[in-house]
Amino acid sequence: MDRCNVVRLRRGATRAALLAMATAGLRDPGVDAALAALESGRTGDGPARDALLRLLEALDNMAWTTHLRVEAGNATAAEHRRAFRLARSANALWSALDADPTVAAADAAYEAHAVLEDWTPLFDLWT
Image 1 (cartoon, one colour):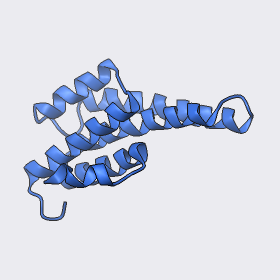
Image 2 (cartoon, one colour; image 1 turned 60 degrees about the horizontal axis):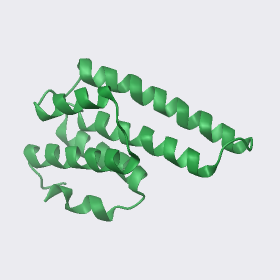
Image 3 (cartoon, rainbow, N blue to C red; image 1 turned 90 degrees about the vertical axis):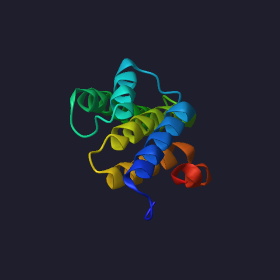
């Protein structure tokens, strides 16, 4: 990433987010709007990123609630992993929309790694 220009950073951030969302199975109209904003170059704060933040917060709350349910014996670890991955994949897309392409790339990769639990598929996204 250190030697990437702005175009490669954005492309890598987008690819990381798409990989995370595909792996987690994230689908939502807010995701579609955020992807459209990203593809058209509308990064930084705006309506699509704001809507995605609301989805991200709801998914984070769901993941935390599921974690508590696991601790109480009312949910499985697999249920928590699914909720966690959905939240992290939404965060990967939210991060990819950051106004700063370097932050977008680094944070989207970090969140995608949380979903994939493996750096290997992410290495080639910036080439």
